[in-house]
Image (cartoon, rainbow, N blue to C red; front, side):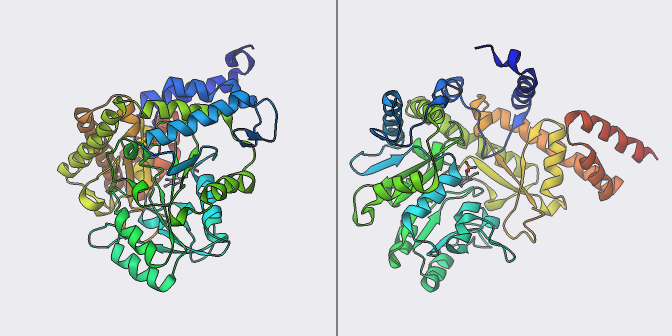
Length: 439
Ligand code: PLP
């Protein structure tokens, strides 16, 4: 029972450095958040010791009386957090992550090599929604299933529902997936349902990014129209890293869905559930069931809106000119700056962001934009006035990058970025660039 710092000071030291990084810097990665201490305690608990293949009261191991209690509690809270009636909806809380939740959902809904359609990765979709390139089928969702992406309207940069309808007429998918990793606007689930019904297809929403906002009732409700809804638990939901699969229990498309989803998670795709993670999910869901959750979700959205407006006010361009949710997509192409350069430069000054493709990017390998999310900063109680300061910092980072690029040449900026992979190296790198510029 000796503490970590005593047993393994090396790992403790790394954790300490990461703690410092997370709290001294500005965390703007749209897929991340800062969980509560309570959630982390549950997630780091003794429950990690227990094996419990199967479902509550139907396990392949003994000693699961408390784990059964925990999993049932987690399921109950999951339904409660999303305002779902247990007679209409069920949930599997065992997926290890969003990717495994999605693959299990595909396994449950369709047969190998059946056709599915998802939002294309360059337009904001996720890898697990059928992504492949001209050279390679690199995700399980395209290796084991046939897939065709739908995209954005190039004018409005909104989902091209008309184009999707036309493509679906030809492709006749068995499954349409909606939801995204980098789409700043809400979804029209009613239209998607109509398109799916035209082909007798299932409709699945992957609300990994927005689930905390959906739970708060701040975004459109996918449960009204979809057959299956998947989510991660660690983004706007503020839980530990894991996934959930909700499935309809009634209606003509719901036949056998409960058994198919449960069997797809275990034994098809996973082994024993991670009970410590399920405890963390349960605690996070309890928080999402509180009246205060709505205020948090509202603030996440207000912060993203303000950050977007402040960037626009400083002359920058955003995809769709704004946002409905927790993220903005910042198009750097008019500045002649790549997303990766700004990402690396921001790393040097404690601002964590990620490069991202923006609609119409010539190459997904060299994305022309940045994705910014406000869930983590809102968890630190930041508000609209703080977003103005964040926008100022980002503006200064861009100006620095542009000066380096213009005055010193793009090679020098590349060098600057290359040598500067940690804050310490960054200082050395900056000094080197300074010397070079003097020369
Ligand atoms: N689905 C969406 C929309 C995502 O954005 C992500 C991850 O960012 C995932 C699924 C995969 O989640 P995980 O990384 O937990 O496997």
